[in-house]
Length: 124
Image (tube, rainbow, N blue to C red):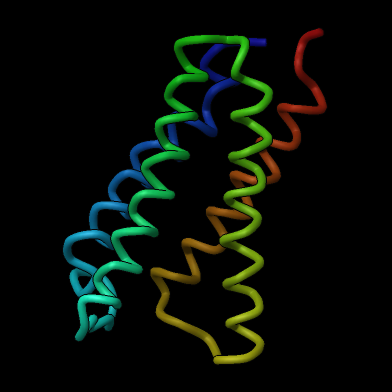
């Protein structure tokens, strides 16, 4: 399998997840109508930033060391599916969000299914 095709989900996920992590951690009101008002709220967003950066680091490691590819791909699938399923629950419970978040959900589902496709069709 072509290396670019095999890692496309990482090439897309890594920069987006890093950018979103930094926004959540330092400027959560930049793209969204979010106004943290307490140290505890800021702490929660920094924790989310840390999780996002940890996953992006693991996916980056998989680009360098091929023996991490399968585990990193599974984690990418679960990460994206977790985000998308949470959004779908929110759509049902809270209503339809902004177009940016709708697009995000579509992208998360696409990346999850692409990762699953790659996993099932990887060269043994």
